[in-house]
Structures are given as structure tokens and as C-alpha cells.
Amino acid sequence: MSLEKQVTEYMPPCFLWQTATDELVPVQKSFLFAQALQEKKIPYAFHVFSKGKHGLSLADEWIRTTL
Image 1: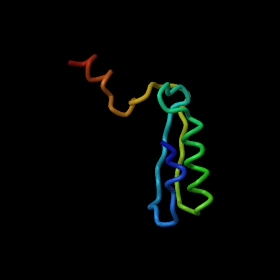
Image 2: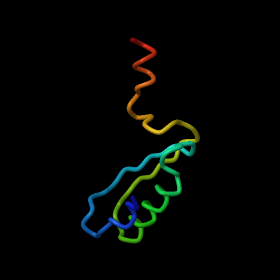
Image 3: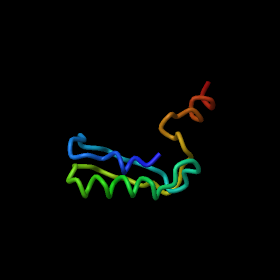
């Protein structure tokens, strides 16, 4: 899926974050999406963290460890 091709001038402001080591979604895809937002003048924040697996925000590993 190419989300950068779905960006229109009607999109709301966006918050993006990604890890550089995501094995399912290459970080380059997020850069392309951020670039498309910038070209359409959509406000956005974009943060890339050095490491972390895909789905990090689900905290599933933390939950398994603590239960």
C-alpha cells in the first residue's frame, strides 16, 4: 500500500512515528508519506526511533512479561 498516494489537501494534521528497524514496514515508506504531507502543506510531526520491532506501540511484549 502506498499511503503517500492517498494524501490530499483535505487530510487532518498527522503524527507519525516509526522505528528504523521495523521489519514489516520500511522506514522509507514513512519518509515518503511525510514528504507527501509536506508537499500538500498538511501539518505533521514525524519521529524515527533507532530500534524497535513492528507493533511496538501495542506493548504486547511488556504485557507477556508482566502477567
